[in-house]
Image 1 (cartoon, rainbow, N blue to C red):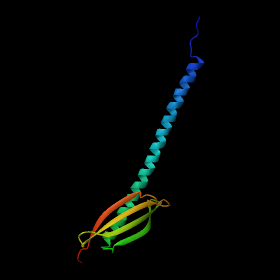
Image 2 (cartoon, helix red, strand yellow):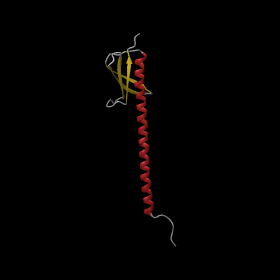
Image 3 (spheres, rainbow, N blue to C red):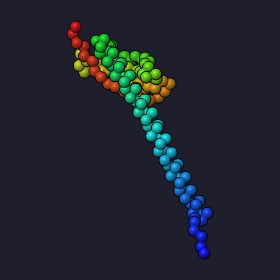
Image 4 (tube, helix red, strand yellow):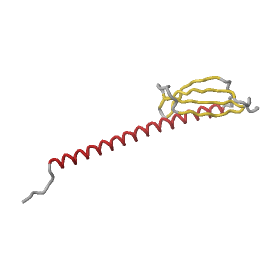
Length: 122
């Protein structure tokens, strides 16, 4: 009479296939988590840039060409922003480029925003 069941080799092959599938699933979850963290950082940095441009606009500033730097906190995270104010072909406008960096990493900008300010008569 022949006994029913799996051989040791069949069990080992099944475990190997299961281990490979679990490793792939773990890698996918890890990549998804990293992507979500990067997206959150980019979103917050974009808000920092928008807030800086809105602040200049609200104060009705017409900044002189040059470079400014500052720090900002958004949702408990620190960011460094750099503002480059330049001239445009029309002297009544200023080009404002704001780059936002994660605190401690100024090798590449997490967010960049370009806007134009008008020198409106008061």
